[in-house]
Amino acid sequence: MDFFARYRLPPETRSLCWEFSRTRYPDATFREAPSQGYCSLTLYLDHESIIQFRPSAHRIDLMITTLAQEVYEGLAPLTRLVGSLDVGDNHSGPSLHVYFMSRIPGVSLADLWYNSPIPSRLPCNGGQELLIKDFALLFARGWDSSLPHTASALISMKGKIGISLRWRLERMLSELPGRFHPTVAHVLNTLPQIEALPWVLTHGDLVPSNIMIESISNETDTNGPTPLRLAGLLDWAEAEYLPAGVGFYGLEELFGRTTTTSSHNGAGRPYPPPDSCFTYFPAADGLRAMFWQELETAVPVLAADTLLRETVENARLLGILLWHGIAFDDGRLNRVVQEGRDDHEIQRLDVMLLKGEHGEPNLPKFP
Image (tube, rainbow, N blue to C red):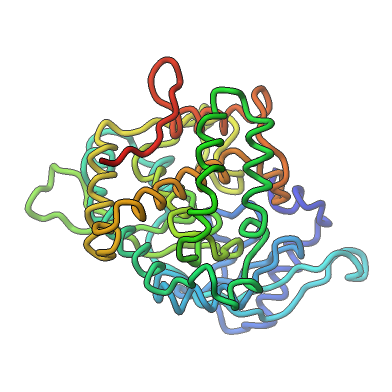
């Protein structure tokens, strides 16, 4: 189901989007982006910009996107509202919000996964070390610009996830399959410590289709894996301030790979796809250790304070639960995932949170 059918937009909506774009930018060249998001239609405007159409339910908080560009600099696109488009008969139907954005270079990690042959030159064989280091620096930037949990400004800036952490955990403790209850209970018991962490501007949809990467020429080893660097992150529409470490949920996608039974490039589908399965790379533990080494170098307090480091690890578990234990449901985010209905999410919880044949919780352990 494409964007127009998903949101029950009239059949002429696509042509209206093109007409709006050509009228607003008469000298530009347009083409539809080959990979479309689940909640928007994106047109490339020449080579360095895009125009994006989003329904009201998924409109962008421009204060948050401005903060994202300030905190993460070139890794977040410049975003501004350029107008709205009324669709339907006599343009009396629903409105689409229209945004101008700078275009981040590179290709998405999803395109790499879905459109490349797996073996020798994909990052699962060693090319993602630079990418892991870039993510450590990304999270360090967020830490450096974080707000203390006591900041008065934070009260007005908390989003729908930040104001409902306990409620969501209590729902998951009640409704997730029993094998996950020890992990949920552990995170719930440590929630006061997690909420006392610095609050960081956190990307709300850190999935492969929103991770833009660039390959680096490897002239000394033409047969080895191609080194990859982080070019930037797309789609900050769901970003909000959350405790430091919650955003680490997205790192799991760098330590493994999603496979599906369908031949597609992931465009316009929710992530993870319902027919998908996630597995870790054999080198996942080493990559995770590399990330923490880089992050502790950039944020020395994490190396010096064992309790703080453990709390951030618990926040990482909270992030995994929030992003895979709560169903997306077109953005409603108010239903706990269920076996038989959301097996692709349950499978990720099994892989990311449990270990061993008896499903023991995979909780952080520190000396």
